Length: 295
Image (cartoon, rainbow, N blue to C red):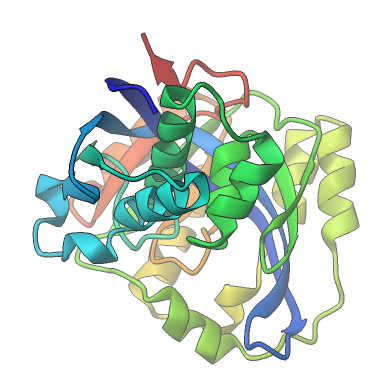
């Protein structure tokens, strides 16, 4: 791998659809989900130089209390270097966080994906996209999607990916209740094995028709079935609807929610109404061909 540095924009994601279909023998939940990247970004800079053995460091002021070895960006660098069998190398990772942590918006997974993409780019594209998905899956279930980006159906435990028709242009408001964070592991433990009938075809059809109202009507998240109706996330979701969202829903396991609005003006007005109780971000869908590598 050549010495050098590169900066990657790591987008947030939302789950337009999330269904749990069962539990595998290894304990992983089988899921079917439709994910969408949006234009709220962490900024990841990766600097590679010669070193003794493998030296990895992660600097992120917003996650200063998290041991760097537990940061998914660190684990992504470890996984890539192991796959590449690279030794005597120093990898320094700097993360500027904008995506709220533990909110269901995929910030950690997206940061990990950005590190994998950065190292592969600095390696002269050593690995194919399919190989990068495999490296990503060893780090976390959402990492392969965060490498692929766009509008994607994921099945298995999230590692089996299939591109969907792109989400039409719209305005999406992300919001996280102040002080709320969710443990994904605890959320999965609460949800059990899943027994609901799939309604995924309705979402896929709505995307194919590029019909925003049908997409809104087809939104589903099985984690909401184990969420208290009086939880901060549930109250915030209902508030977004009352403020004009076509639909609003928990993203992933939460605690973040999102609402789909008809216009930027309406989304900004809703953001102003909730800003005392939540952090909120006005976004739009980010397509796969967005310029994620900074020049």
